[in-house]
Image 1 (cartoon, rainbow, N blue to C red):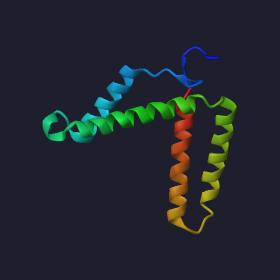
Image 2 (spheres, rainbow, N blue to C red):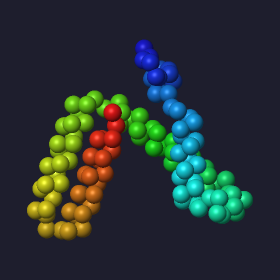
Image 3 (cartoon, rainbow, N blue to C red):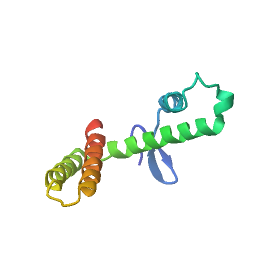
Length: 115
């Protein structure tokens, strides 16, 4: 069974992606990373644009994955991450605390930005 906004692929439902938005994001990544058009495309090359396009697709797939998570599960995960940040200051290793807090904050932002 498919729902609105999905298509059937190999027996499973896959969300439809806005390809125009993905291509626009790829160009934005390309311009930002490689300083295009200040540096000519012929110098930068298609491989660099390919990287930007793969990155844009990965972002779109991750956004679709997060959007599929139920709201109550997201809220519970955010609560766990918030508590992790609170307790991290009791650790004896500052590099470990820094990594833990950074990762938790990044995941909270990812979970909070999706509707």
